[in-house]
Length: 81
Image (cartoon, rainbow, N blue to C red; front, top):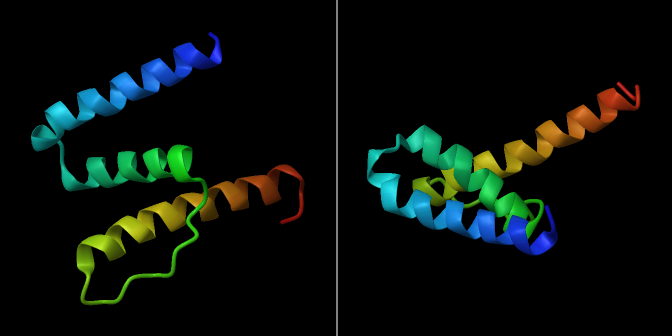
């Protein structure tokens, strides 16, 4: 699969998700959001939102958690931990 095909499949999947998001649970949406942001923006590099902004805080947490999981896997793979 070449790069253009991967990008087309990714774009189509993102568009499909928008059409079915009303049927998805919040946990499922947050899970997919974290992966979408990882692919489109890279690792989480924004400060943690305030406690008052609960929706942004949940999004930040799942995106940041994904980075931490990848870091732990990296460290474990190279026997650093």
